[in-house]
Length: 359
Image 1 (cartoon, rainbow, N blue to C red):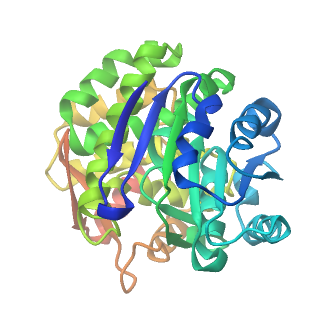
Image 2 (image 1 turned 135 degrees about the vertical axis):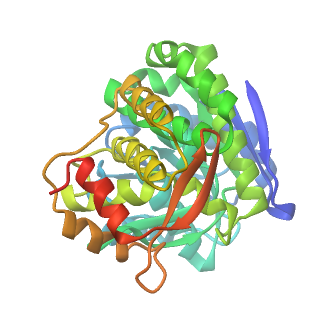
């Protein structure tokens, strides 16, 4: 097991990474002394891991379960209401805790419900997908989707603990593993060229779910994100760099219908578009763009999308929560391992979209 911390003064918390960790949830939750615990999962994950988690948690406090429908399309108000109603039925108070057992959708939903229940109760992230283990479980962003865009309604609410059990990755479809690799590549591209090169080298081992390679890659990504979050918790500056590939990716998700593309698939394609835009700004050369595209393809991710409306994409970007007065700021690459935020002329954005398959 590897452990690290997100340093946020009195709200700092540990991240534990390794195999066979769900059964140890009780020992890490016990110091929080919760009065009651609500275990939130979904219909796919609960049959696999909820019994082990439930057994570990009930040694600490009374526990009940809330099992949600699976899928990005269910990431909305009805699911949040289900969690809140379960907390009320449990008799939860301000010293109770929510434990999110599942992928990014479960973590975002459960975290948002914990953020608004009695103006904020504690929650624990137990991510069971690679994407959630390296990204959404760390940093305290919670929320739900809206018709106009992804994660438009939400709150910053830091977890008290993150437990990434790598054994859960063995039940993931290959497509979900590839989706997680998108965020791993993103972290290397924006912050650490050596880490990016190591991930490139280890892609075959990561696809094969090699335990040592997975633990190393997850820890590397979490360390990068933990450092950024510790310096800029609420995205007033540096944390915006973690959106590399996401402005383009969120458009793909919105225009194709949430759930058609996995989040990581959209981000992977978004990384290629961001690299192309960086080249048009004179930041990257052809060889570096080709390297990004090769890494994304090597991760098993799409590098382009065909046939979406270019005008609809531009409109969607302007409605993104990161836009200011309709002006979109893009995260671009100055080089592999270093990113920056830029306001980009529309003609360059349109050219990148057209090159990526938009019409």
